[in-house]
Length: 268
Image 1: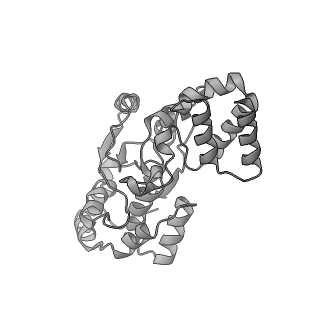
Image 2: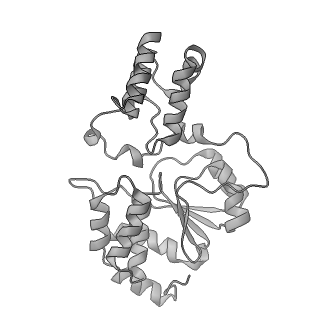
């Protein structure tokens, strides 16, 4: 087994296998189903492979935690792995050591406009940043997954209201975000009573990027500018269907609704 793991490490260094293949083979060699089970065994038996694995996980855009996550063909999944909330990954990546003097923003965090922000799925270490720095009042999640109980309790403790607008990501051939779904999300986002508000999905890339792109249409941004922003946040996995959804979105209904309530124009 030791020789097989050494060969695997060499293959990864030489670029003969991908990160996912490396992890998949390790899971197979040690006959375990998840990284939670693999990491302590590897740390004990092969420190070199353990160190390489830690580096792979830190640099990976698409962390994988079990065999089911490492399928060669995502076509069998309703959604891309990048979009699916993974509770084990979420727990694994929480910081164990926190400083009361340092704020920790979520991954892919950015200011959208005014009191509207965007990010990936929040973690417990982000709460002080939300309350002390952003003075956050609301959060809009664009996923249908069960929300972590730990975060729900922290939101309640800090008077942060959680809104849910479940959006299934754009995917060939028949899954497309509908205008009425976008409008439902925008009615929450544009309402000043909910500000400051954070929008998030899993990675803060595709669904969040699509909704932000629709906000930009309300600001009369050109499609070139909208797509440039979308691609920067979605890199390296920008989706043509998301950009098509933004382009085809008709903002007339929500624009009339928001102007009537004096929610528009949005101010920086």
